[in-house]
Image (cartoon, rainbow, N blue to C red; front, side):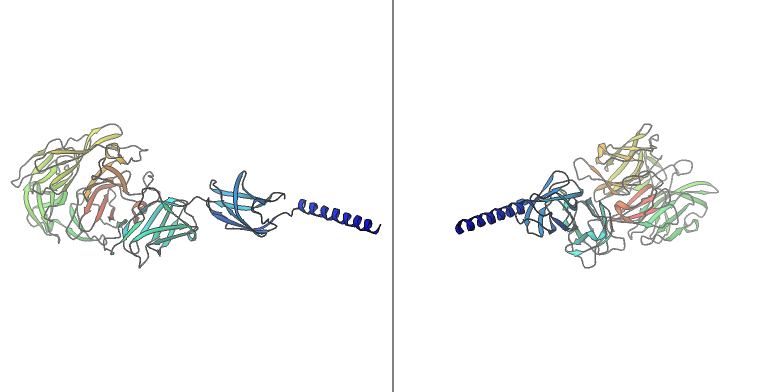
Length: 525
């Protein structure tokens, strides 16, 4: 009997304990979340959920992003879960958590961001202190979230948005890759890009490569201008009849050639200028039209770097004022050429050769030349030759010493159209807006547009003659510009309404002249 009593007591105790076990398994504690660290990341990143009442069995912990985006739990302790962020679109996601059979709780918010990319960088060369611009995606608008280094040395970030960042190359930096880290994530280059190698070069008084500079000119230069061998600018202003020289450093007027300085003809009472150019030996020459008591006169003259004017020869005055000629160049053969018209679509002008005996002849008939550039032994021509209400078909061509013409390409130039932007790509399908001028640099054509206020490059080294933008604000906004930035990086500078472009090969700078008297100097690589 005593034995049966003990057995009965053990049975009751066993039944109670079994009940406790079953009851304990069903009463799972609700998890508690204190924090999520980090709470920003990209797909594949790991985050930590820190709190209590988690299961040490990984499969017992279920983590969901938003609705139906399960995440993989890679490690679990009673107080920490390590979770991999799943593939999901950018934005703030609600993180939900369930442990065993507990109720599902809202654990917090996790922001998913795509990895940053760099699509371009400019400039790619310059001295310490150069401002560079990185374009791309998924940058942080908070400056401190972004870290830029050049060859391992921290650069100073000036301004940043989600897609554009400007930074300054630091002192002591050496040539090498420019890297960007956003919230600890390394930015990747787009496929095929190698924009992020920066070359350190010595500082130049002509400016930092990739930067544009406003020159404060006191006069408005006209179309045909020149650069002397020291890098100074020379131009003739038809309105006040003066020849001007501007310093390349600060734009101040160093020399104003007056009538009194033209000692070979003291009868002149006034004069204006068609243009000024440099010959193949580096000497400056001008074509001037003067007035005197005995009538109109015209001369081709030489100008020294100090502004001394001497007569090359007396010549013919084209047009009633001598100013209907639009351009003036001297070939490597010494032949002096101008035009007998402006070269607009309704003006079928010719290239005219001015002879030293005072006569002239037609050098090339039907040129319709809007702008002329001598490059080595060839003459490059911008030609307007078909006008329609809103567009003009144009042509780039060149003439050799035998006047054999070689066509380069046929883009369009839009005129007087309020909604035209521009089209890059192969030259024959490119669109310009009021293309007024061009120059040659490093064997390629650089164009200037007055309406778009852009400089673009025609790459003559490519089979399709690719057209790309070099400088000017993009995307285009109708003029007058709502903002004015006359000094800055190529892609963030307001250029003048371009009427003339010049390239100084010796100092690797380009000058853009505008209708409004503004001049911009651009330091090329």
